Image 1 (cartoon, rainbow, N blue to C red):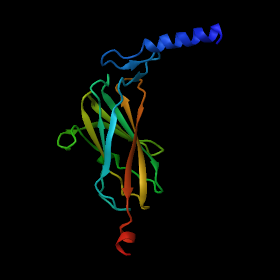
Image 2: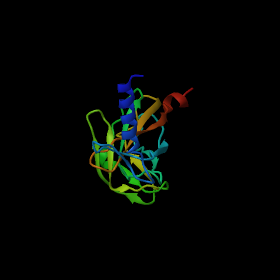
Image 3: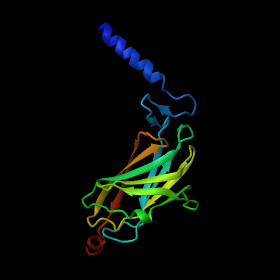
Image 4: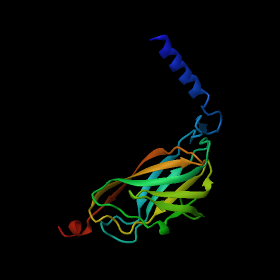
Length: 183
């Protein structure tokens, strides 16, 4: 390896080590971008109704923020990645709860849907490290086409300039009740 490459790689390694978390502090890069020190975890995803085309369902996404996250959870973004029908959400019907039993409500400060249909839920105050939050999204209706639908979940730490961390896919399966009830 050339001396120049060694200097560049060595300098890069030293720069990165300067930003590694100590204790429970978040990772912050030179440009001010904030990352979680320990990434939150998508614990599970479920729906209250599995019938294709049905009304009244809620899709629940349970997210655990580890004790050593370094920063609280400010925003969760959910985007449909797979499925034959597009799901449209009702942002005004979004709910979030501070515990898995959905007893203690957390009021999202804002819910936004972008042009691609990604729904973002902002928390005020943010969800502290060591807490679990359950986000309940209400679709206009379940997808018309049965099958497996994947929803990507991304978490963002608190901060003006935060970098989202992809947590994984919430997998929901919808069934055509007419087809299965009339064999």
